[in-house]
Amino acid sequence: MNKLTYQPIGTIYSNHEQPKATPIQPVFAQDCEGRIELAPEWVDGLKDLDGYSHMHLLYHLHQAGAPRMRVIPFMDTEERGLFATRHPCRPNPIGLSLVELIGIEGNVIRFKGADILNGTPLLDIKPFVPRFDQRLDARGGWTEDVNDAQAQDRGLREYPGQEGDV
Image (cartoon, rainbow, N blue to C red; front, side, top):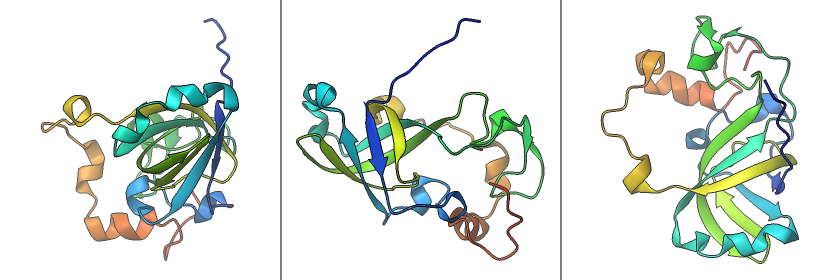
């Protein structure tokens, strides 16, 4: 295969300094605010983004470990295939978060739902479009077997009985 190269378009800032203390998904980080400092050459691309309530952030998981094809996800105790999880130790460590847009001022974008480490390189921003992104018949695989209380406890990352895996 051909090698691909991406350049960050900005940097994501949050209050999360340690991977093991960072919430797992935006749903567990709803009150966590973050900001993006977009590189000046991309600011014109922010036109009309403020009309959306949410956006997808794609970013480089710059502190992820080596790829592993079998992992124990945070919500489970059973080993799963990597591609049936959102574990960060991937062949291409790309993160994806759906966050709430708070505001845009110049090259700074403020958002809620920051489940992202401070200083993370941002690769792209895409608007969340309910007409295109909502799927009423979607299935959640093995995650549907995890009760809500367990997911909430483990989603905060520091929970009783945590074994140190992501």
